[in-house]
Length: 175
Image (cartoon, rainbow, N blue to C red; front, side, top):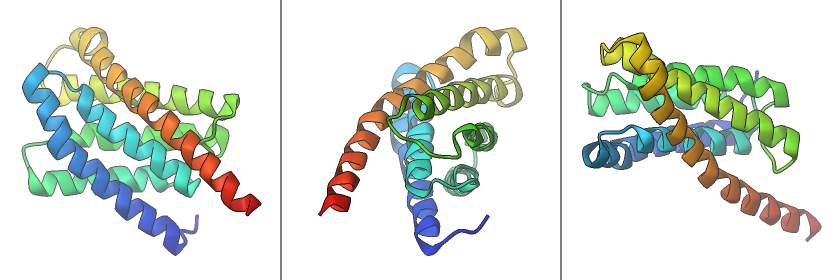
């Protein structure tokens, strides 16, 4: 895997977006609702857009590692970031099935949707059991489901953004 300067810049930008959204929107959502949905929205919106821009294996993992480390540096009590970091690696592994190409094409969108859902649910189970000390049953039936919902919301926001970016890219190519 070879990252070009544009890939490195994308990783840096989306890692910063991961951190800023988690430290603001994620914290706000948790404070207001006591639910992790905005944390997941922050993570998966960042991962999906970074993957779309780069299209390379390793980009989601790098965004997850760097984004989580930024959050942990600023707010050391945010140990749940380790669960999100591991879910970013799973997301990266699952995106291999569409060669890290996210587009509006049905197959690519299906892979991105499944990768988001599996990794968000996994994050919820890990965070619920390991970092919150709750039972596996609670994590599987409650906390994982709320993380899944947050991941789906991130996907729902990312899809029109990606669609608009693809249209802009197509116009640029025609010009």
